[in-house]
Length: 335
Image (cartoon, rainbow, N blue to C red; front, side, top):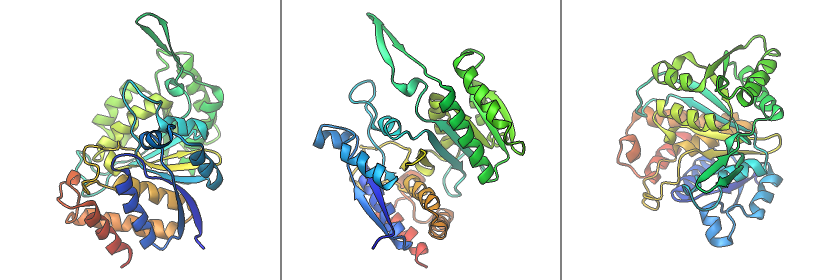
């Protein structure tokens, strides 16, 4: 009898290939999981006429945890992002993106260790848009006290639990004095309950510049939705790109761990996709489940394979297939 039942969303494009890789590695680490697999996004729309089938949502709500591959989101047309719909439907209010140097992955920096915490349910991503006159579109930015307090508390709780020293609130309150001003007020209020953690603030454009110039000045960054979407990708670029960073969407009762990169339809089916981002997300999932031994075993194998730099996929400068890379990870997991 498997110890866990977890909802699996293979995703679009390269998603099925990298989720298969991660399943094999977790199995090698002797974590007994029953996977309930469901389509979402473009692939679900083609089969069910719905990018977010009710059966999928029911599965996640029942089992409280999911692992998700990348989903295709069309630009400027088509259905609303299934990623955004999942976060809103399941109230996954916190997006967590640890960004850490992975030796062997090319980047311009070394020793990066940042954590990005992004509010996940509102801001411009609330999706409130309308045409107020021909050729004039309006998008409304929503910031609430409740959501701002929740994300600030999540950030400080995480900092306390993981022994982080500083939390920086990212904002544009010099221009959006009411919306971003409210967000800052909430961060300041919450910070008072954590006297051992340094709290400071930075304007989002200055933050972008400082991250490029001296990223090591930051420890944890907390921000509203749109800023978080942009800054978290910028930070991924500091350590080699979206292919080597994990991500999670956390709610009070449900959590989804995901690959944060795109579905890469141009290389789908070629067997050359890099599963590292989803694998690192799965390691976060195992830690969340309390499977620390298995999580560390897999993480050590990742460090070993990257450190040796002998078996790597094309995007990492190697010439190996997804299967060869996966087998190399498994070799060190079972040693």
